[in-house]
Image (cartoon, rainbow, N blue to C red; front, top):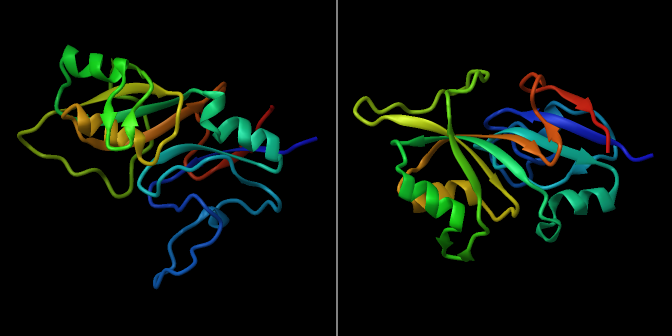
Length: 182
């Protein structure tokens, strides 16, 4: 029976168990998860928060992380400004990035979500509004969501991965993990 772990990764935590080569020790998964034999199924940047899946099953890890399986990943994204319909349509059709056209995304504006406070808080600019989007993609390029929102003129201020497939971070406290079902 394979092991599956759902982890609510805080901002600033490296998505790996060690921090090799850094002159200063940064927090890693080992600061939160003391369970031998599990490894991340995909990555979540140090400056992003939310759901990470870890498993001891290589086939499950591939099914979650490999873009060929098109596993949907949903994010709550706080962006600078208020995107107009054209910007949202661009995200829905696919955005041209330096490494090619992205697959179409599902995107919709959402009310400010009831999330844990981020430490440190995002930078707030007095004269520039911000808003939240729910964005779902089926690929996983490096910093893809941030690059997509920037490409349509709305840089990401805060990025929280909310779900991967049917797994969600809902009701999972920040910095905590629980066992999941395949």
